[in-house]
Length: 407
Image 1 (tube, rainbow, N blue to C red):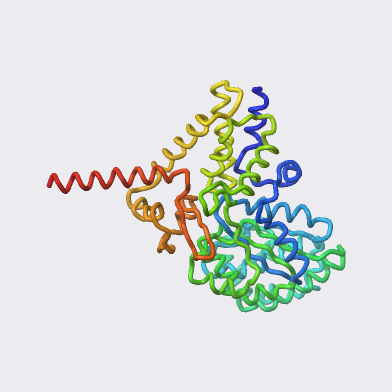
Image 2: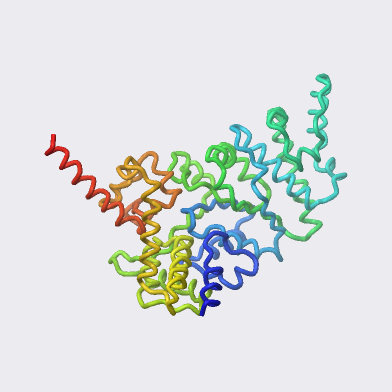
């Protein structure tokens, strides 16, 4: 039994998204099936641009990793790390073009072809302009493969900003070469753009949205959820008609009863990751309801509940093991939320109002979960801390009433 608990705790690790063989072993299709949506759009639309967002822990990376895995045979899938994109204002778009060129040149592998793609003149012009200052400037290999100093980088990008049309034109030349060489279509998938500052994503995908739409290959990219509550989201929605918002898995219906499809999804997650662990009736259901439909939160609750059962040397995960974990989670939230923050989020325990200014950071910290339906945009407190917030509000109101009477 000890081995079963330890294996389940390893498989229930909520932090890394599924990838590779883990997708084969543990992947469970979500009821809303975003995978099918993405696949259909990729095959039906030439050079599709698909923005993806949703709350932290909702399963974006796992869905994207399954796309990457399943498309490898038919597409030349390029999924670079985002360290090449800069956070300094005004450099996002140029950084993005350089990143696209760099990643494709890595696959080309033959740097002597650099000139064939129309890039030599751009960098040669820069070398010429810098020559009279007698400053050494890195060649194109260093530009595309090595980190530059902030000063050199800024000087370079200020120059490249005037040559961005030439950089853009080179994308088609490199694409044509690679697709002919590999007999596959190119698709770029950016999973970590949501971790960049919002202003950088805005510079790339909104300020230069028309240019991005014209890039001659398919791009799937995540973007920060905060942008969904920004006035500029309207521009993004106009530019990219097929954006995908991943909602938390539905765990509760409008009648207050558990959502059967959502409950079946989370039960299947446990069947795959912890097949040898028994759960007391009702525990999995409460675990799913407490997660608010966030997969990462559910896995965290399940893993730590299994740990509690192991510590008690029990033969199954019982309600008391989950309750201990929920209590621990509430205490953690209590330590990081200030009274001012409680004031701001307290309204969501009793009403369903439109979003208020500054709420983005709460969304990004999983404190607020978003729900949309035909009646508009609604918000709710994370179910884990909902009782804590209500308790805090009652206590604070009593303290204020006591102080009024005292003075």
